[in-house]
Image (cartoon, rainbow, N blue to C red; front, side, top):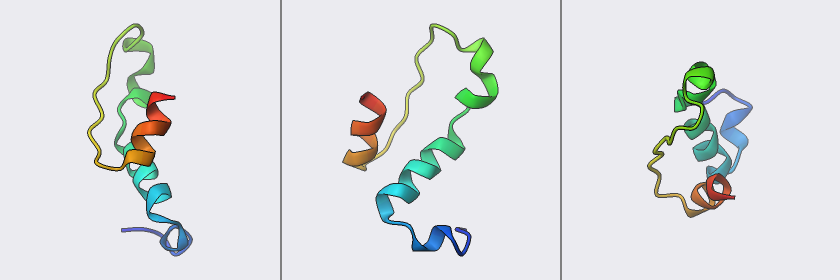
Length: 52
């Protein structure tokens, strides 16, 4: 469920936020050094941002 503020954001912003919120990297960052994390999304803008 998106907050009232978030409900006005564009789909690309919401999908990026969903990837960020589901991302365990921020919590386990110190344990994931030199590791790969797979993120699956069908949003090409999010994929392009992550790959940059």
